[in-house]
Image 1 (cartoon, one colour):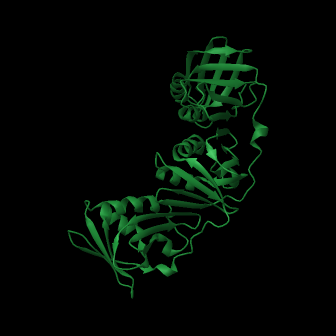
Image 2 (cartoon, rainbow, N blue to C red):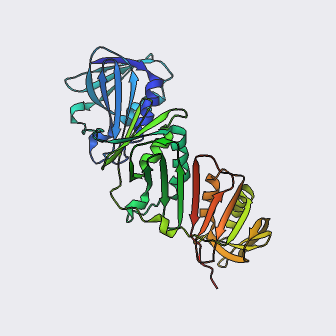
Image 3 (tube, one colour):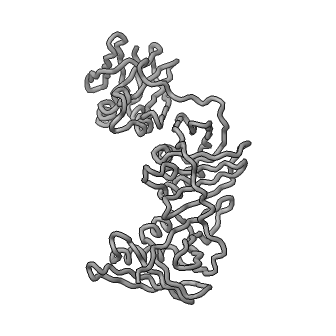
Length: 371
């Protein structure tokens, strides 16, 4: 089997698919790309058995067939080649591969494509259409709030709640929570599932800016299809916590201030905070917010004052600066508002500028004030 392709076009597709390859795969053949040629179309597949990415590219071929190609050596070779046509010659008896470029020949040992694991297929699935831009936004705004705690698997992914024409994304690690909803979807179903962090990171890197994404799902897998790319991931089989129960209502104290000023102040003050808790203290009175931190172990302390609009009782509350900065970083509004009730209850952060068709709420747990 022989085929020719542009080196740079092939490299681009391999880099998309290659994200699915694990650094320590459970089977040696999972270190390979699966190349499948059918009617002058090359389908490139890569998987770690949890996440699978397939992508397609046009080639000039003298036949059809399958071969497993070592990923690392192929990627490294193509990165060092300027753009040019290259030819793959596959020996179907011993699976040896010879690549010919304008500079010379490179030989590598492939494996039998028939030994590659069976890839999941979409069968009896429900499907939702989502704008790629909206999906990218949702991933950016929620992924940072997922947990790394493998003992709580549900929290290591993002919770998707499909409700006919509405899609809600929730992420939490029990210290912070993000709930992001948008209504620009077309769906005939109402369901929910948890998508793992790795798959969403890969998806975010591959999403085009203008396309629509077809999201299909069954009990075990989610399938994301757009342009010439398909990403399949195994869903997290766990029950998501009742996140609505932790969102406080009837918060009497309302703070409004500039997002960038608040974020920059927190970044400076956090330098002086205790490195274990990252605790900053917000002391809020009518029209004035004092942000302070101290690290008693090193006798470091810092205080800044910001102007704000505030309605409510004077309040002193502690938060983890790192969490607040992460949240302010993904909100795009010029001003933000915080709803607060007491020093022991979660604070809720909203953007002032509301985008039509979307809603975002961020929650952060307080760091208890030490006496």
